[in-house]
Length: 121
Image (cartoon, rainbow, N blue to C red; front, side, top):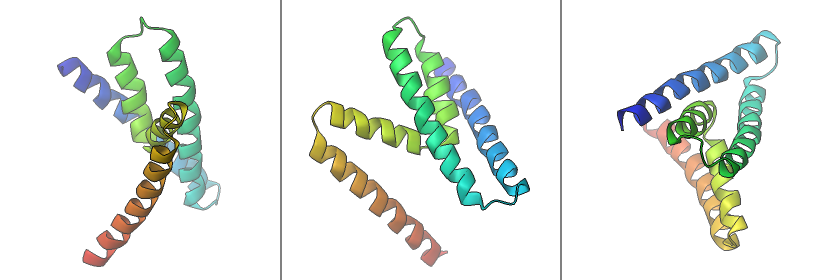
C-alpha cells in the first residue's frame, strides 16, 4: 500500500510541474491562461487514452506504474482525462444514458460548486 501511495505522490509532483510549466509557457507567450488549461486537458486526454490502451494490452505492467502515470501524473495534470476515460468506457460498455448523465451531472455540478464556492467566500 505504501508503494502505491508513493507512486501516486511522485507522479502527482510531475503532473503538477507539467501543468505549471504549461501555464508559464502560455503566460510568457502572452496568450490567455485558459489556453494552457485547454491544452493540459486535451493533452491529458490524449495521453490517458493511449496509456490506458497500452496498459490493457500489456498485463505485466505493475499496478504501481499504472498509478504513477494515470492517477499521479495525469491526475495532477488534469482530472478531465480521468473523467473522459470513464465516460468513454461507459459508452463502450453500452451504458450510453449513464455516460450522458455522468457528463451532464459533472459539468453542471462542477460549475455550480464553483459558483457556490465564490458566493460563500
